[in-house]
Length: 255
Image (cartoon, rainbow, N blue to C red; front, side, top):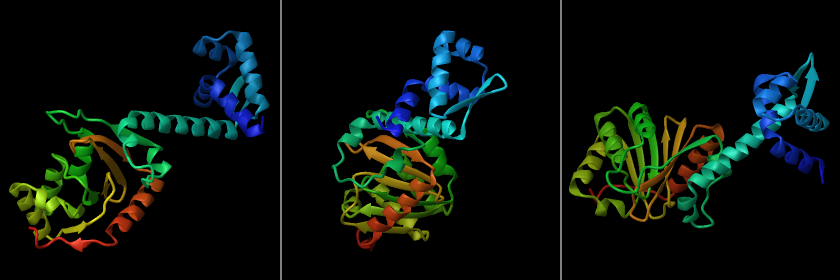
């Protein structure tokens, strides 16, 4: 077994102790009390962590090394990413295998799943982000409600600078009320363009610092929203939106 494999194995096996050490810098007896492990077991765990230079003992306390703290953070980050992947597994599994979604989308993210049935309750944090943002860039194959109504209303009133990229089939499919709202939004100086190809997910970039990636059910209702504010995810979203927009045309005649 390589040194890397051995380290991964010991972090996986001893994560509860390593995490507690990283957070509390405890004495051995505190570890016994906190983890409900016996003293001989704690002694053995500490030795294993020390052998990999993840933990050191000083002045009667167990302390993480820099490598130990990073190993704990990395492992927890991977675990959180897999938890998110599991939460959105059904929707993600339905995407084409070549869908361009980087792993950075699943790191340091939060996932929200409204019920796929009426009433379609809004996601409060998402609604609040849309309410408080000054600018929004969105690429979407589906017009979400109530979020799209909120976006169009704020764009029409001048409260938000809106740039929408929509699939070319959307305008013809909209009811008159929503066509009117889209027209008013564009009339107020916002940008609305159409493309003939768009991913099977939506991207909503708020103030260039909050990203929502949303997925839909077979009935085109929002089923998963992934919220991410990491620099990597934001940079990827800007690049992806630019790619989607490359062959866009201004929406005019259909409204």
